[in-house]
Image (tube, helix red, strand yellow):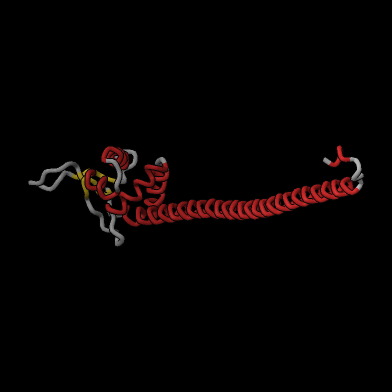
Length: 193
């Protein structure tokens, strides 16, 4: 069993990552959890795994090749049409394939978990930035309102001071004219007129 497991591990670990991911999905349909092998057409496997038919066929052919021999092609049952079906090449491979698939799914879940954690960290950073921007914007709004109130108060005070200065000027002018009128000699009619 160790030899079989080593063969399966070596053959499948040599696949590119995308092909390993596809193999995990394909083996999920070719080997039941109890270790029974099932023969399925390449088109069915492509449909079940949600992968392109050409991609699935290429991988199936590679897994059935003479140097790998994990799968074997099986003709369709007599009287049925359809393309070549594939099944694991020997029942002894089932436990090793299930074990490999379980390990690959664990790696996949770990990658997905790490990816989700990265996304969560990015979203957390964005939320902190948004919160900081919102607080900054709020502070700027308060500063702008305070500046507007101060400017309005200053303008009102300046207007009142201007009005008061004009009034004081008018009073001073009025007093000056009154003083001048009191200082006019009634005998001097030219000036009085």
